[in-house]
Image (cartoon, rainbow, N blue to C red; front, side, top):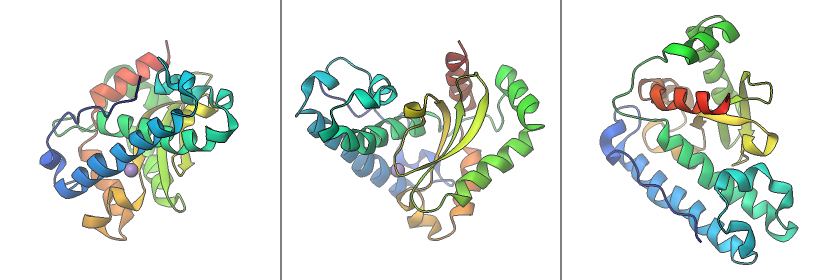
Length: 205
Ligand code: MN3
């Protein structure tokens, strides 16, 4: 069984003006598809590890992956999973803010939604090089903001990501060039808080 590219749940241009259509197309159709293809290729050497396991299971138990393909799975499996998450938590029609239980937890943990937003943006803007800023649920079921280099997945650290900002240059460079903070700021207009809250509730079960 091979991992498949999830269908993008909106048109390439749907995330404009926060993310332009060409960036979404190249990011999804070349980068995301590329990770998926390379993950499947790496697992051909040890088919038993891809067989029937979800990508989440694979990344959570990364040390069980044979050493000769482990780094490839960290890179390409992480890339595949992180992008699945990224597209799923973006939406052209989202609310501007979370509601309900997630908003309550954010306010309790970070003081206010604005302070939370500030901290997430700071993580995304200060990550050196290529990587991600994530909001995760840790093993104590608390919210945490983490920076992650390359395609390393928080799942391999026993943390469940519920929100992700890709800060590799391929995620913004066509439109924003070197102005990463402008992209990091604009993405707040297109977060899919309904889906992020669903992931939160799933993670604290
Ligand atoms: Mn990317």
